[in-house]
Length: 131
Image (cartoon, rainbow, N blue to C red; front, side, top):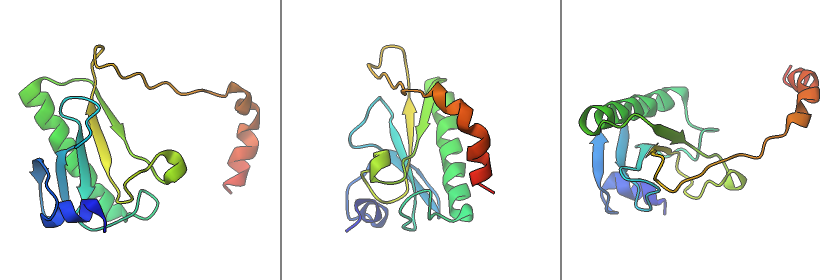
Protein backbone atom coordinates (compact mmCIF):
# COMPACT_ATOMS: atom_id res chain seq x y z
CA UNK A 1 0.00 0.00 0.00
CA UNK A 2 3.03 2.31 -0.09
CA UNK A 3 2.27 5.32 -2.30
CA UNK A 4 5.92 5.76 -3.26
CA UNK A 5 6.22 2.10 -4.27
CA UNK A 6 3.18 2.74 -6.48
CA UNK A 7 4.91 5.79 -7.96
CA UNK A 8 7.99 3.71 -8.78
CA UNK A 9 5.81 1.04 -10.44
CA UNK A 10 3.90 3.66 -12.44
CA UNK A 11 0.62 2.83 -10.69
CA UNK A 12 0.34 6.26 -9.04
CA UNK A 13 0.88 9.44 -11.05
CA UNK A 14 4.05 11.47 -10.68
CA UNK A 15 5.91 14.25 -12.43
CA UNK A 16 9.33 12.74 -13.09
CA UNK A 17 12.37 14.99 -12.94
CA UNK A 18 15.02 12.25 -13.20
CA UNK A 19 15.49 8.51 -12.70
CA UNK A 20 18.05 5.80 -12.97
CA UNK A 21 17.88 2.09 -12.16
CA UNK A 22 18.15 2.72 -8.40
CA UNK A 23 16.34 5.97 -7.60
CA UNK A 24 13.51 8.19 -8.79
CA UNK A 25 13.11 11.98 -8.48
CA UNK A 26 9.73 13.66 -8.92
CA UNK A 27 7.93 16.87 -8.04
CA UNK A 28 6.27 16.80 -4.62
CA UNK A 29 2.48 16.73 -4.98
CA UNK A 30 2.25 19.08 -1.97
CA UNK A 31 5.08 21.50 -2.74
CA UNK A 32 6.47 23.93 -0.19
CA UNK A 33 8.24 25.79 -3.02
CA UNK A 34 8.50 25.79 -6.81
CA UNK A 35 10.44 22.71 -7.97
CA UNK A 36 10.12 21.02 -4.54
CA UNK A 37 11.31 17.53 -5.43
CA UNK A 38 11.37 14.16 -3.70
CA UNK A 39 14.09 11.58 -4.35
CA UNK A 40 13.33 7.98 -3.39
CA UNK A 41 15.05 4.63 -3.75
CA UNK A 42 13.18 2.27 -6.06
CA UNK A 43 13.46 -0.41 -3.39
CA UNK A 44 11.28 0.13 -0.32
CA UNK A 45 13.07 1.25 2.84
CA UNK A 46 11.14 2.86 5.68
CA UNK A 47 13.58 5.67 6.47
CA UNK A 48 17.22 6.55 7.14
CA UNK A 49 17.35 4.01 9.95
CA UNK A 50 16.91 0.97 7.70
CA UNK A 51 18.16 2.04 4.26
CA UNK A 52 21.40 0.36 3.25
CA UNK A 53 24.49 2.49 2.80
CA UNK A 54 24.65 1.46 -0.86
CA UNK A 55 21.02 2.46 -1.50
CA UNK A 56 21.54 5.74 0.35
CA UNK A 57 24.55 6.55 -1.84
CA UNK A 58 22.45 5.88 -4.95
CA UNK A 59 19.75 8.25 -3.69
CA UNK A 60 22.31 10.91 -2.80
CA UNK A 61 23.83 10.64 -6.27
CA UNK A 62 20.43 11.50 -7.75
CA UNK A 63 19.97 14.32 -5.22
CA UNK A 64 23.24 15.80 -6.49
CA UNK A 65 22.25 15.35 -10.16
CA UNK A 66 18.89 17.07 -9.63
CA UNK A 67 20.49 19.86 -7.59
CA UNK A 68 23.05 20.44 -10.34
CA UNK A 69 20.25 20.45 -12.94
CA UNK A 70 18.31 23.05 -10.96
CA UNK A 71 21.39 25.20 -10.55
CA UNK A 72 22.33 24.95 -14.24
CA UNK A 73 18.86 25.35 -15.79
CA UNK A 74 17.10 27.53 -13.21
CA UNK A 75 19.94 29.33 -11.46
CA UNK A 76 18.85 27.99 -8.07
CA UNK A 77 21.51 28.60 -5.42
CA UNK A 78 19.54 28.22 -2.16
CA UNK A 79 18.29 24.72 -1.50
CA UNK A 80 17.17 23.00 1.68
CA UNK A 81 17.54 19.22 1.98
CA UNK A 82 15.25 17.42 4.42
CA UNK A 83 14.53 13.86 5.47
CA UNK A 84 12.60 12.61 8.49
CA UNK A 85 12.77 9.26 10.29
CA UNK A 86 9.75 8.30 12.37
CA UNK A 87 6.34 9.70 13.10
CA UNK A 88 7.54 11.97 15.91
CA UNK A 89 10.12 13.39 13.50
CA UNK A 90 7.22 14.33 11.19
CA UNK A 91 7.67 11.50 8.70
CA UNK A 92 4.32 11.02 7.00
CA UNK A 93 5.17 8.67 4.12
CA UNK A 94 7.05 5.65 5.41
CA UNK A 95 9.22 5.05 2.35
CA UNK A 96 12.62 6.74 2.60
CA UNK A 97 12.62 10.04 0.74
CA UNK A 98 14.70 13.15 0.67
CA UNK A 99 13.17 16.55 -0.07
CA UNK A 100 14.96 19.02 -2.31
CA UNK A 101 13.34 22.36 -1.48
CA UNK A 102 14.52 25.41 -3.41
CA UNK A 103 14.40 28.44 -1.11
CA UNK A 104 14.08 32.17 -1.55
CA UNK A 105 13.54 35.09 0.80
CA UNK A 106 10.01 35.48 -0.59
CA UNK A 107 8.84 31.84 -0.40
CA UNK A 108 6.87 32.33 2.83
CA UNK A 109 8.70 29.47 4.58
CA UNK A 110 10.21 30.09 7.98
CA UNK A 111 11.82 27.03 9.53
CA UNK A 112 13.34 27.88 12.90
CA UNK A 113 14.27 25.40 15.60
CA UNK A 114 13.93 25.99 19.29
CA UNK A 115 17.47 25.52 20.55
CA UNK A 116 18.53 24.29 24.01
CA UNK A 117 21.87 25.79 25.01
CA UNK A 118 21.39 24.35 28.49
CA UNK A 119 22.17 20.90 27.06
CA UNK A 120 25.77 21.94 26.37
CA UNK A 121 26.63 21.04 29.96
CA UNK A 122 25.62 17.43 29.14
CA UNK A 123 27.81 17.03 26.03
CA UNK A 124 30.52 15.00 27.81
CA UNK A 125 27.96 12.58 29.24
CA UNK A 126 26.16 12.38 25.92
CA UNK A 127 29.37 11.30 24.21
CA UNK A 128 30.02 8.70 26.91
CA UNK A 129 26.55 7.26 26.27
CA UNK A 130 27.68 6.48 22.72
CA UNK A 131 30.65 4.36 23.80
